[in-house]
Amino acid sequence: MSKKKLVIFTGAGISAESGLKTFRDAGGLWEEFRIEDVATFEAWTRNQKLVLDFYNQRRKQVMEAQPNAAHHFIAELQKDYDVHVVTQNIDDLHERAGSKKVLHLHGEIMKARSTVDHNLIYPLHHFEIKQGQLCEKGSQLRPHIVWFGELVPEMDNAYLVTEKAEMFVVIGTSLNVYPAAGLLNHVAHETPKLLVDPGEFNLDYIKNITQIKNTAVNGVEELRKMVKGKLQIS
Image: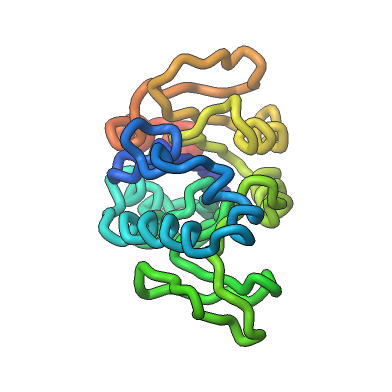
């Protein structure tokens, strides 16, 4: 008997509970920088050293962080379901928790890629990309990140995965911000949907959705019961 397909869409909220702040958080790395200076291709062409240093510090923080209970719970679900994680997060906490099918919409901080050939991608085992580190075609390595203004190459794959979902779970990301809202448009009306977030949302326009008003970590046990009940696993 084939496992039911469970798609889990995660955002900054789940990583925040492992201590990783986003550019919206007070006291976060982004507070010292303008987006235009560190997260656009124009910034890269203008000041490679600044961009590399910024992402090197973010990478160092990711390497020091640990997956939390929500990351581990998602990985455990693989025992009973065909789990696909679609994430806006650039960290590798899902993978370190044990999730096997993870699709990163905004890139991966623990990888570098060629500036001239987006298909040349290299794993990183240290927090630094240095000036002078080149790809095999001789161009400077850049962070494997989707910067503002760049296309999201995995978006079509995310739509395809989402369309096959037999249950769709949103954790730690707003339903009002792209691409979460866009992904929901690709979930069948009859497919059960769960939102794990302590915030207030107008969910009237979404069919068959239930909200767990809690954070990712604190909502794990309730989420476990809801998934089990709605997908009828004994």
